[in-house]
Length: 239
View 1 (cartoon, helix red, strand yellow):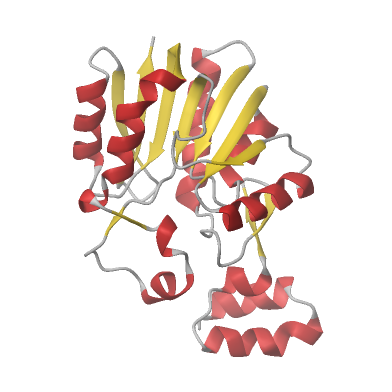
View 2 (cartoon, one colour; view 1 turned 30 degrees about the horizontal axis):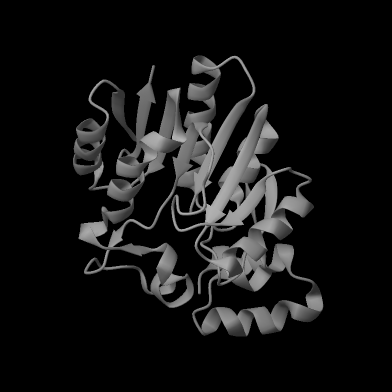
């Protein structure tokens, strides 16, 4: 328990819930789950233990993706958010851009949270269950994903490991499983001109770029850094 979390409780919890919130903090529960919501890119999102807590890095993914979309497209676009979780990426893009957005997740419990956030934010995202592309039937201008990317033998902070859903954290193949799966299967779901945008682990830039170059030999592939100067994003641009 730290002073920042205590101040967060004091700011967002009503007085009658404050002491219970302190006790939950002492037991190691994440403050965002105790409060039940989080501010993200200027919007408010409900969160619970069925979804990841949205992070600053994902806000930066959205910021970079919006800039790239505005550079590459001058029309209403179709966007697919894979592994949508709370819906924070899909909803934010739908609010910020002239777009049709689909958000998919394998977890129906996560989708329940995303659909509630869709109502709260008055966005128009179409959320549905799909194991990556299993239930996807259309083509998109943009595919974006912050998939599970932690290798199963990597060390994880205790508060993350004990609170957040492991299905949204860990991936096979040294954390690269979902990048390989999404990129290798994506050609049937992309329009001729496209953008793919990924959040990645800090040590995965080289490997994800190799995967992208293997399946999209003529695309522009870039690895970009987060505010802490770690490799954190991969963009694939097809023209």
